[in-house]
Image (cartoon, helix red, strand yellow):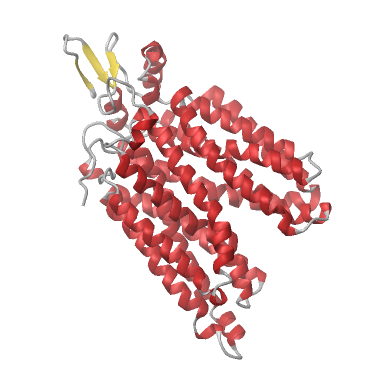
Length: 477
């Protein structure tokens, strides 16, 4: 039996970690992954809903655009807090329960926005919804990681994270149909109802993470049934263990800052923070930059669309590359590509096409080149950001995995908050020329931080027995 063995007293054991890592990828596991991915799609949709509705809100309420700045900032801050709290909840009460709670929270609060009539109510409900939105991703990615075989795990987690921009794209398509005919209240009502429906599906279809259940002997009956549904039959009477994970005394959240994990924790936090700055400074400010350079709003929007499309393709390629060469080499190259493409963008956006009497016409003529390089930059930067989630799921053991990933993502959210102010500041420096310099600089720091992490994912061909993706940490450079 794969994953079998004996205890010191001679009894039979079943190593749940090996059964999961070395067994086939069953249809049951794929369904769980699909549900986790759908949760993140709805997270991405609800996260973008306010941006879609903002023009109608400004018109209906008769307030200035700047009056919504605090609403947006508070939402991003709420997501940072929710990410950290959601990670802790995932380790305390289980990934499934924490994910369900997150979906119910952001679903109810998003639906409630449909009946608000002022900035005060909108701000309060947006903050509460953001707590749920923040808690969704760390638990969805952890659940996806812990039900997927080792060689498929980086790809599965990356696919889950890709659902954030996919949710935004779905939201854009729905907003284009709903807003002109039914108004902004209908959009928030729809965004609130869908996660509640999915939560009902979760209750019926999605089990708790097997790696979480193995920690609780009283729930081993539930775990045996689940393993059977995955096609991993366990001998009757065999003790269930997970040898690859921390054994004995429970690891507490403070272990993130102990000698064993301090370096990786700090480096992972730095990578998340600066990579999030690079991503969100584009989401927030690139259309403003492009229109200030003389491009029309349609071309400016196409630039952001190209950035997102490049991000989706780059993240898929990044997940594939990690399986082939490991996360250290792949992710350092991704971050370095983000630096190089940002430097090129600076010259494309502020080169000869931007100066002289014919500058506007020249920039328009070179707009396709600019859009192409935005797609290239999006591919590298978003590939690095998306695969960071798989790396975070690998760095920490089961007892603190959701906490470790949640805290790292929360720090990244703080980078997103900073990007709103940093982007506005650099656009005022030297005619905006510091904009792409900021992106290059943040990705350079991300590159160094990634190289400093010790527990990287090994290539699939170097896979060892047991563990999450790989049990043994890669040697530090």
